[in-house]
Figure (cartoon, rainbow, N blue to C red):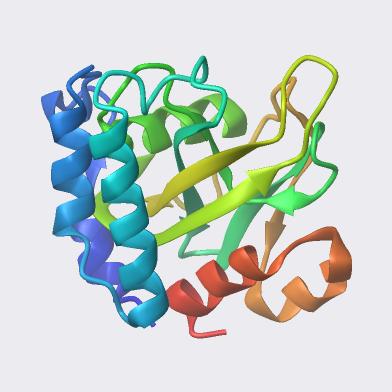
Length: 203
C-alpha cells in the first residue's frame, strides 16, 4: 500500500517546470529507469519498455508509430473521499484510470498530469513523479488504426478534497470509486485497474 500522505507531499503541480513538455525520449528513459520494480513481472515490463524506447529513439512517444507507442496514465485519488476517479471510456467501453497518448511529449509524469486535468476537468491536481506501475497492453484494431500496443507508465495524481469533476468528450461518465465499490464494476473494468487500487489503497 502506498503512503499517500508522503506521496502527496512530494507531488508536482501544473505549472511546475518539472512537468513541462519535453520531446527528448531520454527523459522518458530516465523515468523508466527510476522505477523500482516490485516483482519479476514488473521488472520484465520495464525491460520491454526500455528496449522499445531504444529501438524507436525518435518516435516511441508518437501515436504515428503504428506498432505501438508510449502512453501515461494515473489513478486520480481524493484522500478525503477515500476514492479514485475512473472514466467510462467511450472507445473501449470500460471503467479505466485517466490517461492517454504522449503525442510527442517524453515527460511521462507531465503527460499523465495533463491527461488527468483534461479528462477530469479539475485544474488543481498534483502528481507523484515516481511511477507506480507499468503495463503493456494490446489496443484492438479499429477502422482507422491497426491493432497496436500501449506501453503505459502509471502514476498517482491527487485531487483537492471533494473536487467537482466534469467529464470530457472522451468519456461516457466519471465516477468516484471507493475500494469496496470496485467489485461492482465487475467485467466493466480490468485487472490492471484493480492492481492500481491494490497498490494505492491496499484493496
